[in-house]
Amino acid sequence: MSPPEERPWPPYYFSAADGLYQPSGLARSPWDRRAIAGGPVSALLATGAEDSSLDADFEIARLTVDILGKVPHQPLRLDTETLRDGRQTKLHRTVILADGRIVAQAHVLRVRRATTPAFDPPHDYPAPEAVRLTTGAGPARMAGAILHRPILGGPGQPGRGIAWLAMNGQIVADVTPSPFVKAAMFADFGNGFGNATPASEWSYANLDISLQFLRMPAGEWLLIDAETHMAGNGHGTARSTFADALGIYARGLQTIFVAPGHLSDRRQPAAKA
Image 1 (tube, rainbow, N blue to C red):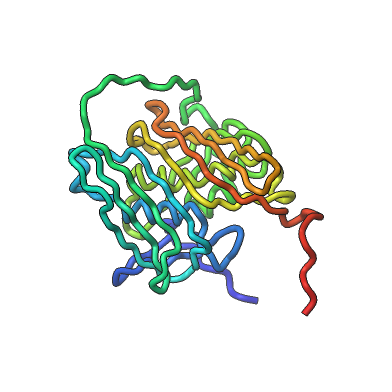
Image 2: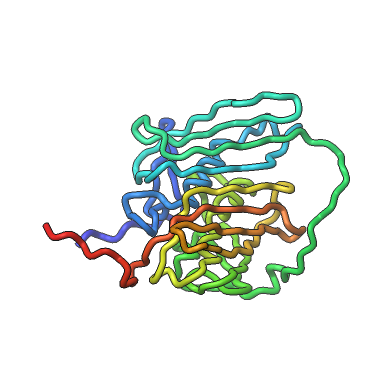
């Protein structure tokens, strides 16, 4: 039997050295231990897409992530290019490379800051301090890296899921994650918190993430309100609303690949050797 993987504290998903990002055991995908989960992939791309030199004049309005097949659990490299460098908008592309091959990409749309009318969407979510903190083991808490205050439903419970989340760890070791990076991480959780049926019957692998920001999030606790919908044709969508203590800051969508779960009688039997 293999020895158990060490759990670093504070928990981190990647360590950086010599231009490479080495994933920890915490980054492993629940679907394939040889791959990296969608949340850490999205957060790593967001880390590579940050540009402090633009923050004063431009704000991120959209993040889209495409997972181009399996992101292997091995050292990875980040690369960023500018696709549009306009006076009002800028579009950047960040990629994750494994052995020189692109395995995931993100497009980040930045829009010039300006003073314009505000029409904030209403919300009536309870404040995070009014919701009990969940303790103990569980996939949503990722070995203590994620703090969880559930409001409605949640991972493993079919239907709409609402929860406050906070990060008690780091995406890259020894680096405090920004609100943007944390938002990118939590944007992957829609298909887990708002799953349509028990995961043992049907699984929901994430294929992409689209996150449209009204503004950048603020504070320690970020809320997700998620639902998954399917038309019975092999794929579906997870739709999420994201809020902080000040109100709603973004809306998100994911395309999900639907397949029989690990206890489903619809799974094909393993082929004989």
